[in-house]
Amino acid sequence: MKKGEYLQALPTIVLMVGAFLLPLSLIIFYAFESGGHLDFFSDLNFHVTLFTFYQAVLSALLATALGLPAAYLLGRASFKFKGFFSALSSVPFVMPSVSMALGFFTFYGSNGILNAYLLHPIFHVSFTPLFSLLGIVMGNAFYNFPLVMLIVGGALAGVNKIYLEAAKIDGASRLETFFYVEFPLIFPSVASAFLLAFIYSFTSFAVVLMIGGARYATIEVQIYMYLRTLLDFKSAAALTILQLSFVFAFAFLLSILKKGFGIFSQESSSSKASFPLWGYFYMIFISIFAFGPILSQVLAGFWDFQGNSFTLQWMKNLFSGRMNAYIGNTVFMAIFWTLIFALTSSLFVVLLSSVSARLSVKKSGFLDALFTSPLAVSPVTLAFGYVILQGYFYLSFPVEIIAIYTVISFPIGFQIFSSAWQRFPSFVDDAASVDGANFLTKLFKVYLPILKPQMISSFFFSFAIAIGEMGATMVLYDPRFPTISVSAYRLFSSRHIPEAQALGSILTISTFLIFYAIERPIWTEK
Image (tube, rainbow, N blue to C red):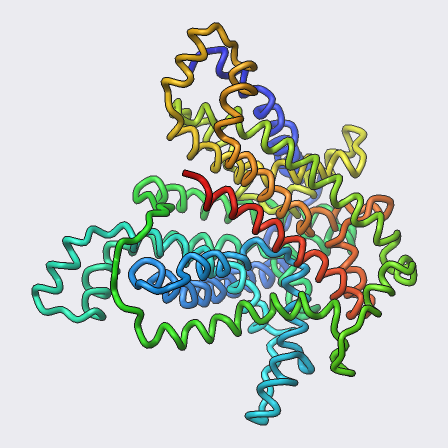
């Protein structure tokens, strides 16, 4: 690449070095320079690490088991409302973690909707997975099965029909064709989807903290406990380095699979296969498992489950000031600062990723690796780096949170714009250059108007991530600048469950509206 092109990427490089690599480097520096023995595998750390692996494997297996049937339906079967089913099934992945956890309580709780209105009255049984390993596994699978569905579904749609026709000529049944022809071809995508689900489950925070309860702690939760409860920075540093080593190893393996097999294909299937009978049972099951908690969370803010009636009491309690002592501020301020943080970081993501992603078409492997590396680091780990950074520089909470939100959302915007730049018509760029337009002129007058759908998608994806982020915000939390997600958790932990669910309803409904805004430019793009 030319020198001028690196200058265009300089703001993003500064962001990644100063707001991402520097805090991570300081964790390592602090761990080995603060004196004393660094005990990576104390009894507690060994137990926590072993449990983290165990629950991540189980969660990835369940996510894969739930996602594969949906992937087959999307990639092979022909049925009405396929696009609607795909879009709706993707919602769990972008749902804020605190809303998801509250939805699980509303739906799967001992007096929740599933038990009170379905299982107990009809079958005289109950199902209470909360505060258990099963609850953690279900929560992680809820988040990650859409990844399996989209990745493997795209791979199935891309399988050459010649292989399927040859198997049919040889007399193979649909089941035999899948296991002996299609599955070997899509296995790299299945393995990659499993590994990605494993990574996300390995770094899960809110699911374990809220659904698992005090008996269960993963590496992510234990780091938070070391920092905020025990004030043991040395042990937090040791566990953080351990987590980084594992996650980067998993991410490296995932990058090999992605590069070798192109696992993120989103091709549309031209298959006209009939809708299988088992598909109806699967849709009923997945509707209960995934859509039940989502709809329950929306309903919870406006429904009195004891009186079986519609109510606005929980919302009134929120905005009347009665909950201020538990939140540490007002709900109005929580909404205000959440919007400020999300808007600011999303604008940074759009501006920086739109410029830097243009360089990805130049095949700069170093920049690609740098700009996507935040995917392999959890927000809690990054926030720990900022805690150490505070010892060297004066940092205020708003600056830290905006920087973290920008960093963790940036890879999403980068991938969206990278795909668009690869399809960008080169003659438009050449014509603007002939007319004497410099880079900034072309950026605002040519590039961004053409890439408007990507701008909208990138902005709202980043916005959705920011309003639901909880891990880093809790580590660095300053009650003067409350957020919706942490306020909902504070209400939940203080046993003001209805008010927490009401605040979660606001967050869930907002996410639905954002998701709708994201889908519109994608579906209307030509």
